[in-house]
Structure formats: C-alpha cells, structure tokens
Image (tube, rainbow, N blue to C red; front, side, top):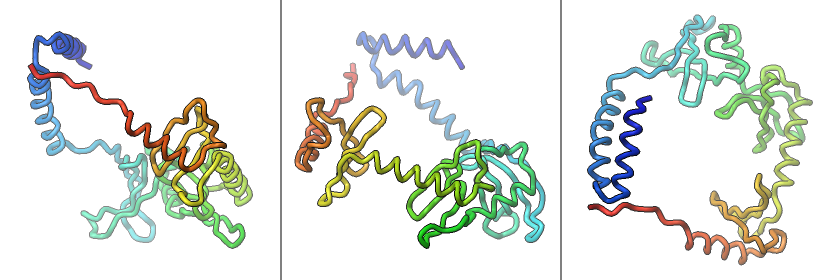
Amino acid sequence: MDYQFTAKVEAEFDEIAAGNIGWTSMIDQFYVPFHKNVENTMETSERATGERPLGIHPVSGRKIIARIGKFGPMVQIGDEKEDGEKAEFASLPRNKAIHTITLEEALELFKLPRTLGDKDGVDIKANVGKFGPYVQLGRTFASVPKEEDVMTISLERAIELLEEKIQADASKVIKFFSEREDVQLLNGKYGPYLKIGKDNYKLPKDKSAEELTLEDCLEIAENQKSTGKTKKTFKKK
C-alpha cells in the first residue's frame, strides 16, 4: 500500500471539487501509465496458480497436479500442450487443500458426480461445483454443509437436504402469476420484494404483497425504473 499516493489522490479530489483542476487531466495522469503497466503485466507475467504435482495417473500415465483455477482450487489430469489430449478437471471440496491433497484423494474426485440412488425414478447425485459441494435431484440443488463430505454422503442424508431446500424455496414464494411466470412476489432477507426476471424491486410501504395484482407489480417496476438515481458528474474546467 502506498499511503502517500492515496493522500495525493484525495487532495486532488478536493481540488476538483473546488473547481481548481479538471478531473479529466487528473485521471489521465493516473490512468494512462497505470493501464500500460497492467497491459505489460498481462503480457509478460505468469499467473500464480500455486501448482503442485501429485503424481501420475495409474491408467493413462498422464500427470496430475493440484492448482488454482478460474473458479478456485482444483485438480487437473494431463496438459493438452504437453500430451495433445484435452485435460480433465475436478474442483476441490472445501475440506481439501492444494498443499495437502494426496494422489489417491485426487483420483477419487474424478469419480464425481456420484449417483447415490433415486427418488421417484429420478437420480440423486452428489458433486462439487463452482460454489462448492452439492446434491442434486432434477433441477433442485442443495448445498452440502462444510462439515460433511460429498464423497461419503448417504442417499438418506441427500434426500433430507433436498427436502429442506424444496421447503425453503416454497416458503420463499408469496405469490406468482400464471400469465406472467417471470413476475413473482418473494420473501427476502429484508422482507417481501418484487422480482421480474432478473430484476428486483422494493414494495411500497403501504402495500401488502399478498394483495398486489399483476398490474400493480408492473406499475411498481415501471415507477422505480423511471425514478432511478442519476450519476453525479464533474464539469470540465
């Protein structure tokens, strides 16, 4: 951390606010050299992956390493640049670490997803994804608690986690509209709110979520869009 640089920037912001210097000039002095440094780093520096060799695959003979990937710690079998074959990847569960995982434990990860059994003819699977270990039934996903192991979780425990998730999802929905399935009134961390597609909207304090009609919801969304906050801008001197 360069505290003198931070203090200098804060002082320049004060000068901009007072109208003594133009903000574009100040930003250019910082951003142009900074951008060049970033581009140089991207071109010449190697990514820090924390790569750790684990051994050789007993069947394919390809190398196995543990490293940091785009979505976190992972194990990799093979290297397309070295052996000409597409590499295989498996995410590390939360209870495993790059610096301690063994070759045997790494090989077990490639047995995922595990099919634990089925419920009403639909397979229940255990796996590790971008957000950690989970169990799956159709399109329903439930996280596996960090103190439990996705490699040993039972069918009975998976069903319990999935049922809890289904109940939680059901209690979250206050109201939905068959004619517009993308419009929902939901219970959130801070109370009821309106969700349309991927957008969320606050409900008026004098309105009850249960009483709102589809037309009310669309009007709430439209009003909030039209009264959005505007960004502050500096006038160029």
